[in-house]
Length: 321
Image 1 (cartoon, rainbow, N blue to C red):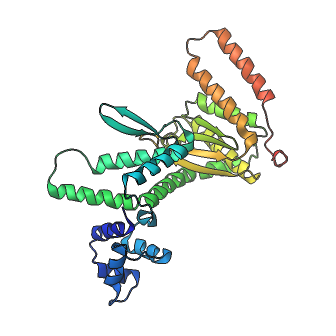
Image 2: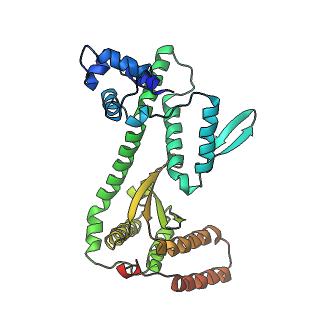
């Protein structure tokens, strides 16, 4: 859709005339309608500052009136080529339908997968397939269009609200823990912390991408820990993240919605922390397969795991960075 059509679409959604929108943007009463008419007909493109004012006047994200223009099937193909090359999209044909497929397990596109899931969930909620009246259908279309116009700001606010809730819940206990100064000194200490969390049935996933290590938790589980020990362990983890940050490592968070649940990932951008991921994943794999195994199998794993903890171990201090 061309930029002019996008502006018109959201202007109509807000029940504004061209003159009313122009005046909200700051044009005079004598030029307001003509300026907006030129923008909507693509006779003139609004400069960056005017585009920002249009987005504000329409109460939409500026990304909703971006410059992405697709006017032909050839344009569509080059967009799809880009999705294939950058995000690993593939094509599948089944039962007379062609589907564009992304791998949910590709952690390099976890944010994209989250956005796609949010899109599907919202569309299912706002645009059900049940037969409804014309008036109800028009209202659903407007609600859906309004949601799309605020997608970026809404997802950012949603994620921020979730993370703020986590930080608020654990703030006092993390502060209390930090007074003990009993922080991990090696990557193996963190692995043992994660092992304890897994044994408390935390839904933990770990990721590694060269210089970035990620640790993912279910937000609902964090906010409603099953036991006091589980809550203490997550408090310990948050305190360790704070300490790692103070020591100079770059840390940050991101949220994902791989299904209908919300997950938060804590990232540490340090290559030397890779053993945390590899050994934690080793223990996760063991837990997934240990049921019904012999005592010999379990003893062999414990021996191998202890050896790895000693051999694949990096210090957590400023000198190690």
